[in-house]
Amino acid sequence: VLCAQSFHWFRVPEALAEFHRVLAPAGRLAIMWNSRDRSDPLTLGYVQALHAVQGEHPVETMPFDPQALAKSGRFAAPRAVRVPHRQVLDRDGLIGRATSASYVPREGERFRRLCELLLALWERERDSEGRVTMRYVTEVYVAEPREAGSVPAR
Image (cartoon, rainbow, N blue to C red; front, side):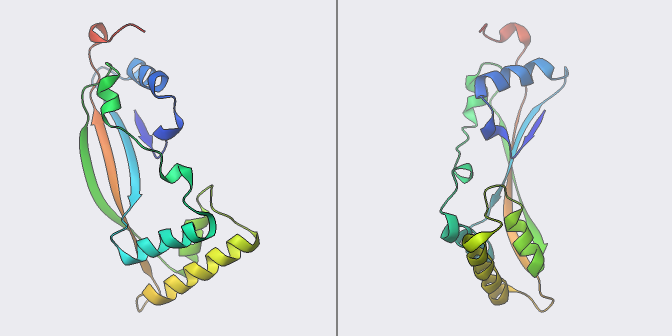
């Protein structure tokens, strides 16, 4: 079972019970996020532009406690894997990347301001081919299910 950028939307106890139920005998649970690498100047500037027009959206700060998997009694403690990656974008791609998030404005004054900020960022950071690179860290937590007989009744 893979939850990519979605686990924060689930009711944790019920979701973990269902994941455990549907896993194949040799199955694993993987919970994955792509987090923006704020140590990178372009990526930090992108985050700052988003926050300037709307503040930090709650979906960006929803916490995940990896130990919740083991605490459920249904899964062993997860193994964490962190992998850096990047997304190369042209000018339109940078705007499109921002507006692909459901919580980002797509019209009105806040949208116009966001475009101004992102275009200034693109102008400042672009390479000779007109591209910028967003940097991320993919975090994956992989957990093995505990035996059905060892799972506490609920």
